[in-house]
Image (cartoon, rainbow, N blue to C red; front, side, top):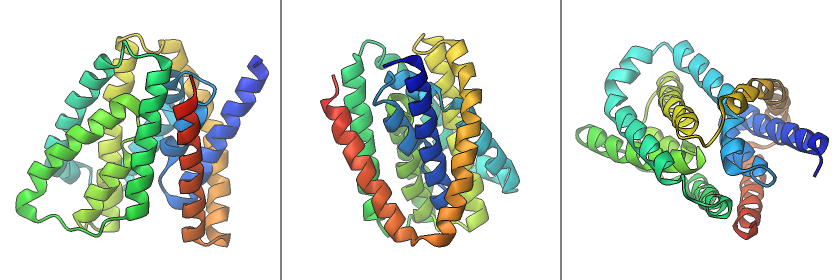
Amino acid sequence: MGDTTLWLLSAAALVVGGLVKGALGVGLPLVAVPLLALWLPPAQAIGLLAAPVVLSNLIQAVEGGHLRASWRRFRWLVLAQLVATVLTVRMTLDLSPAQLNAMVAGAVLLAVFLLALQPNVQIPPNREQSIGIAVGLGSGLLGGVSSLTGPILITYFMALRLSRDAFVSSISLVYLAGSLPLYGAMVGFGKIAPLELGLSVLALLPVYLGMRLGRQVRQRLNEQVFRRVVLGLLVVIALILLTKG
């Protein structure tokens, strides 16, 4: 596969990821990472999204106006996620691309299950911190392997019954706090080069274009139908990754 083809395919995957985020409000790494991993090494696929993920979550965490309150409330979740992320990145250093593809595929299938199930549960205040630490460890484990922390965090924060603004600010803070050690550990352990991480700045444009398209899709299509199409696409991608050597 030529360089031009790789660039075009990667740009298209980023547009699709941005489109899903623009339409549903979430899902950029969930869609773009497994798509990119069809032709790129998993580590490069994750690194290519560094700038869009960090920038978008930084903006949303600050704009919500709940940054300090979110940190005080969820700091133990964040710290547990940080430790689990760094340790998981370290443990995956000796895995082959095929094994990493299988792990990404497994994370995608778990995400599809959680998003399709949409469990209607509520976490009592006296168990919020202990469950939050467990969620932080679980999301760090998934993040260190695949960068796909979204579904488990979404399930947890929905169970807390937060207001919309508090939900967006809190989950964006946790996403941001999880992405920084992820990309830092990947560079520190040599899974991606600093230059490759810098190339993620170029990914901002196709992601932005995709998000613009996604907002138009959101206004014209039934959200539930679009969500089912996305989940079906993710299952197909995961199955392809499982068979990819």
